[in-house]
Each structure stands twice: as C-alpha cells, then as structure tokens.
Image (cartoon, rainbow, N blue to C red; front, side, top):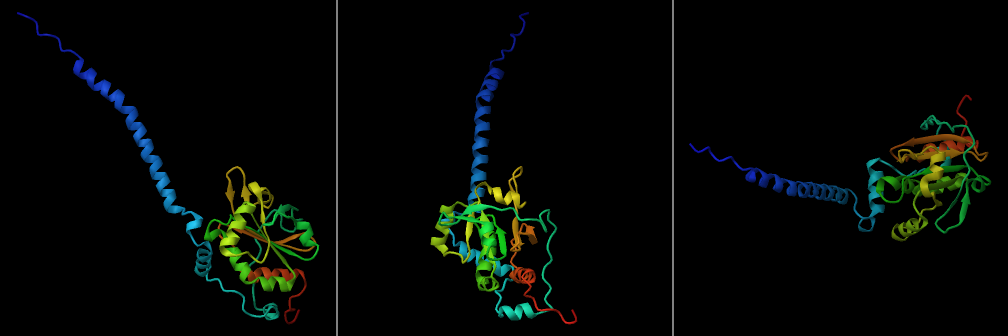
Length: 249
C-alpha cells in the first residue's frame, strides 16, 4: 500500500508569515491611536489662552470661592477687635530673613526685594502663571483690594515663571495689575521660598508677609491660591503697629 503523503507546512508557514508582517503594523497602529487619544484629551483639557477669556474665568473662580472685596474703610477693618485672622502655616523660613532676589518686571527693569523693603513691608505672592483662571485668581483678588494695601504702605509683588513677553500679552488682553509682576525663569526664586520642587517640578501657591526688616512673619502655601486679603492686611497692620488695641490689653 502506498503511504499517505506527508502534510506540507505551506499553510502554516503562510499564516506565520502574514502574522510576522501584520504584527508590527498592529503595534504601530496602537501607538498612533494612543497618541491621538492623549492629544485629544489634552485638547479638551487645555484650550489655547487666545481662545479663552482668562479674566472672566478668574472672576468666576473668585465667585466660586465666595470672594468679596473689602468694602469697609481701612480704619474700620483695623478697629474690629473681633476679627480673627487666618494663622500662619509652619515654614522653614518663618521668622527668618527672606531670601533676596532681583527679577525683571513687565518693562524689563530689574526689581529687587531689598529695594521694596526700603520703603515698607512686602506681601510676596508666588503663582503658577497667567495661563489659567485658577493660577491668577489671587492676583485678581488682590487687585480689587489694592487701595487698602497702598493705604497701609505695603508693597505687593507677584512672581511666576512666565516670561516678560507673556505677561505683556496678557496685559494687552486683560489690562495690567496695580502691582508689579516679576518673571522668575526656571522658578529659581520659587525654589528658595519652597514653592517649587525641582526633582518633581511640583509647584505650590505661596503667599508671604515680609516685614520691612526683611523677616518672613506669615506664610501660606498650598494647591489653592490664598484670597483672604483681610488676613494679609491685618498681619501687615500688626507688624506696623497700626492695629487698634483690644479692650483690657
């Protein structure tokens, strides 16, 4: 009897060859789909600032925080012995000398902390940058109460890694703030004040009250901006000895 013919591997080989060809294409296709999904997600999460009204969004952010500008006269605010300011947070720089710096303002002029302190205390604010409502809502809040700060003789200085050019562009779009905004390229100064961690590139909002003697006397850091301006004014008035004395003291 004739032996049955051995089966040839042609069919199996054909499938293997096809899989060898298709496998890389499938991998490439999955990569392309993954990139498209990521880019699409980012597009949904981050609309170009030029297509948004950041000022309107910042105002909405303040409304969500129930922020209200200080409407009473400064002397009335300072005479209210019942007001309890928000206490300072712990910080390695608390009651220590504030790290000095020299940064450029929107006009490209050098501005130093030491120069500001020659004529009064300083409220120093670190914010993420003028690219979202959350980042600049504190600056909008301070701007509304700026006359109170000026009446106390305190300088407000805001710092972020934004370039001078970007801040200028935002000023053209939404108007300038009533206080200087300085450019801290690479967050070098933010690192000194511990609102930026280089290893993880993590940022925090930071607010510092600095006496005219150059000491940090109050601080607040966190993921949300600090908008309780009355506390800042109260603390400045305290170190400037302008608070009304409480009864019996």
